[in-house]
Structures are given as structure tokens and as C-alpha cells.
Length: 404
Image (tube, rainbow, N blue to C red; front, top):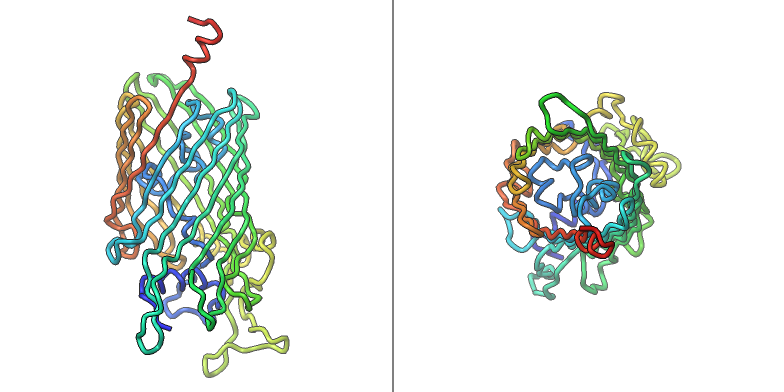
């Protein structure tokens, strides 16, 4: 079968974990791959303009994707957001991630939210070995999320979220392809800490800390016959943020995020003189360094902290680092910048981002733009945008209670 190149790129990315790495890569890279990588794409332009930072930034409608515990501290009663991210725009023009999210406060201590992400891979034409067209299909993936967030004290909140993930990479009935849509159910556990401080010469300031373990869930399979199942991108995200209101009009925030995939690191397999993987008496490849990656999701999460074949140094290489700054003028206009770093042995994503935001009454609009340090990013030189609508029923509540 022949399939258009843009589809092959995504199909190979999604199932690469199934086949693993038989030998050590020539360039020394040891990328950890998973199924459904689309759920790791930044869906909103605010965090997209801040180097994919979001663990401890101020809460907004898109907190679902970074740290849902922040919803308990959001200062609006309810709202929603709509976003779109063009993908691989330099190669094709029909691939992108659309998202919609809505939230609502329940009193002062609780909040709920739901969201939907839909990743379209565009139109793909299937052909047989002779080039005869078999039909055009549109592969897609999506996830639907729901969360509950609650304050435990004036400074501390937590949240749990549930997620259903659906990945239909080959939406066509072909008898000689034993494939099927992949599905998974996952959960997030998140914490958020917000502490207000007094600093001389500063109108107001606060230090925040966020932690989110997202996509804790079942493995996924794309085959109706294979017993091999792929890990989904379970991720640990944590970091601090510092906010300063210099005066009544000017506010500056700086943030740091550390991220790590909580899935097993591919081992190094033993090879013979012909550079072929040695198969043991149990019918499985013999591991020379590292640990067996064929474990349960929970075991894989624990094992991911110490299973790197090359020890502590490689474990440190698996941590992504993002730093960002955000400036607001009179809560109406903002500018942002960020930087994301990933080891050259673990994906080599390195990029700067810039962004801007506008807020007027209930309406908000955010933009972001990515500038790659290495020319290997699907979002390079792409403009991303998000629409936001935030509402506050404080006046209605005061009127109902008779307060002037």
C-alpha cells in the first residue's frame, strides 16, 4: 500500500513505540516515543507564547491542559476558550489541532471544567501497489476531558481530571490491514500553591508553585491482532512562578517549568557480529543495558525515574526545561516570551516563543509565534491564536443579596 507522506509521518510517530529501538542509534539519540503525541501539543496561544510554560502561571480558561488545580483560584465566575494550532504548515495546509474548553466556579472554593481537543491529519489518499486510488480518508484523533478543582485552604488547591482518548489513524476498511482505532482512558492529579507576599516598593506580589501528573492511563493498541500496546504520554510537570504588581498598571511574571515523560526508557539490546538483535531462549530480545519496557503503566511511571541504560546522566537528559516572562499593562494588554530546551539525545526541541494578549470586558485574544533554534519543529514560523470569553456574575450576586 502507498500512503501520502504527511500521513506516514504521523502513523510512524504513533506506532514507533510498538517496534522499539533494536540497536543504539548512530547519532547517540535515545528518544522516548509514545502513542497519541497530539495530546502534548500546546493548545493555547498564551502558554504557546511562553515556551509551553503553565504549571504555576496565573489561572485561565486553558488551565485544564497545564494544571487543572489552578481553576479553584480563577477570578471569574465562568468562561470558555476556542483555539487552533496549524501543524506542519511548512509542508501541508490541512493538518491542525482545534480545541474548546469551558469552566465554571462553584462558590469560592470549587470549580469544574470540560474540554475537547480534535487533531485532524487532513485528507489522505490510499492507493494500491499499482497506484490505483482506493479512496480518500481523513485520519483524526481527539480527546475529551473533565476536571474538578477545590481549594483546601486560602493558599492551596488540588484537582483530579478524567480523559478519554480516541485515535483513528486508518479510518478505512481494508481487509489486508489489521488495524483499528486506538482508545485509552487516563487521569490527571494536580496541585497548586499560591502565596501572597509583601515586598517594599511593590504594590503586590505572589509566589506560586504547580505540580501536575497528567495522562495516567491505559496503554493503546492500533492492531486487532498484535498483543503489543503502546504507552500514552504520561507526563510530570512542575515549577514555580513569581508575580509582581509594580504599580496599579504594570504587572510582571516570571515562570519555570520542568517536564519529564513517565514512561520507560528504551533499553539497549544485545547484538551479534552482524549487528542483529540477539533473541533469548524466551523468544524476546536480550537487554544489554537498561530495563524491560514491557511493563504496566504504573510500573512504567515508577521505573521511568531509574531505568535509563546510561544511568543518572541520561535520566537528567530526559527533563525538559522551559522559562518564560509575561508583562501586563492595566490588565488590558500583554507581551510574552519564552524558551524551551530539550536534550539533543531526547528529541532536540529547542525554541524561542513570543506572544501578545488583549483583554477587553469579557473578550480576550492571544497570539503566539515560535522561532526554532533547531529547524525541526512542526510549529516553526507558525502563528497560533486563542479566543477567550470570561464572565463574572459578582454584580448579579450582590444585587440578589441587596448589597450596594
